[in-house]
Image (cartoon, rainbow, N blue to C red):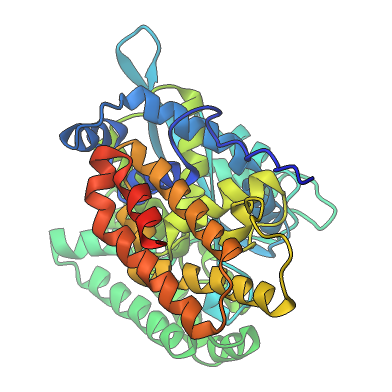
Length: 455
């Protein structure tokens, strides 16, 4: 006697959405910048009535299951020797006041590609209700790195005062922020001093371009040979120009800003892993700004925290990566068996009891090959992507029945060769594609077509 295992629960127990559907909603908002109300309108045009509050509830449930991934990312960041930090505004609706308050998303990035590092690039967003120094002190507690690459915002100065086993943080400032100041002066005043300063900064970046992606020691040697002489001549030149111009001018203010942060600006001459600017973190903040432009604000602080979490997972998945499948595997595999995020798609669907339990060894091998062949066929034809978002809630059930029917075929047929197996699977996939529009409307046409195909 065989007992079939209970079907694993979905993210929403007893609910309609599958993991793939929730993954699509997450990617649509935080990857494609479609707020929930726009997604609800898209579904409504297809005859599906889904409130944006419902979509938010589903995504909120998914965040609970994604927390282990965030903890793993945080553990990796804590071991990084050099991190980038920046912050951006996060409007949050104040309950009962019909207005928003300003919170902030703080971004922490580790990206070693500039010096040929093998570590994975990671961005982790934290939501905080303010911009004070207590927030970076809190979420950077326990980090082991030496260098903190940031802008000159004063809250980061507190990081150099905390006692740590491996010494206080060393702040590394951004040459791009310096350059922006002199670009404005050149564009507004046509200042020859600003023009010369921009020329010197351009030389530094030309040197960096020649060694980008190379080993840290190679980068450091090139900097000391070519960049150090430029830096050595630049500071006295700036001091001389400052003594010749009106002290209350904006250009004088820009020069004083540069000289005041000089020690952090030239720290790239001490270590080949350091970058000249904070562009790695600023580039990761841009998708946050696009989502904020469309969604306007978070409904509450919990929603802002979920926003930060999901943006951390979506943004690092570039456009060439199958982001929906990435989230589905985490929600589906990792939730049921933590640590097993790379199991095959077949393991997500328990096999039904065999109608003919006695099988030869070669038949078992053929069934295993058939499952793999079926996965490849579905991937090549983009079947899952055609069902995201589903044209009708019943479509999710069609997918499950389709997979179940394939399992029945693999269990009940005596395939005499791999060619016969491949032909049968191709026929089922063809039936699936032909009956998809009917299944989305009727609900039974696909299953009937598959049963007919076996006769």
